Image (cartoon, rainbow, N blue to C red; front, side, top):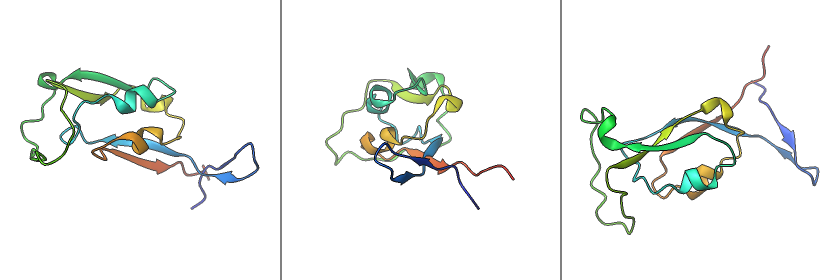
Length: 105
């Protein structure tokens, strides 16, 4: 399967990987992905507005990250993602999934 690739300014080939999913159960609402995203892909929403009761909650009380009170990140516009993966690099909980874009046949 061939995927979409680009070339950096220095001439190196690069394969962008686009956001496909965000695990809101693991998300601590820190906003790092929102701050680093150069596009309008994310939004911070009230955790109570989502239906997360059926999902298992991890007890990660041994980490140094504080959860934003009642907030969680949400995918606002997946089609605006440019595939830079900056969000995945800054996420302390590894909540984001990415995939390269296959070329149309």
